[in-house]
Length: 225
Figure (cartoon, rainbow, N blue to C red):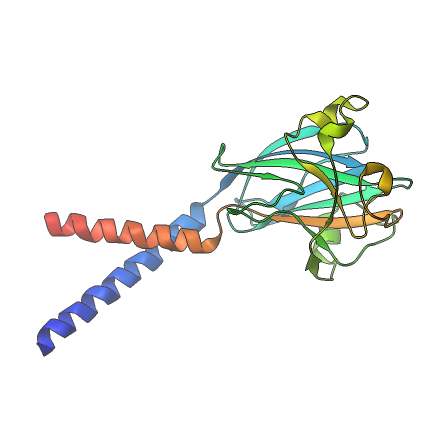
């Protein structure tokens, strides 16, 4: 009986080691495809981790409040996509549709989901004298994270601004108290720059489970041989 228990412990240890090794290989080579469609009143910069260099890089930028743009890129699972969003005054909005892995998960701004997290906004709202295209601004932002204020459906404004109707049922979001009553918020934060983030699908725990699963398959294959 004691010998059987020792053999079982050895088997479990080998399986755990194989799982860690598989996870290491997955993490080293892992990348997640992202399709991000976004519009911001007035300007923004999109940032993500480059899987090859592990550095935060600028993905794209724009300075046109009623124009939606789609960015297709790859980044690291479990990391974050960041958006530095600038409002010049009067009203503010951020709207997006994010598709991970060709449709494995879709996140609409301002729409809660039971399968993945929505965008968060930083608790520090900064003046407009900072860059919205410099990764160092993101890295040194400080603050904490909270739920953004939610405004109108983008599609409610599609007659006047057609691009806002290209986000399915996504809603406008902004740093609390919001981007102004004219776009469906309860209040207006005022001109300034907000930092948003969205966690990249899937999270590391999912990859750990995948690594353990691959290790288990490897053990079964060796047994069959």
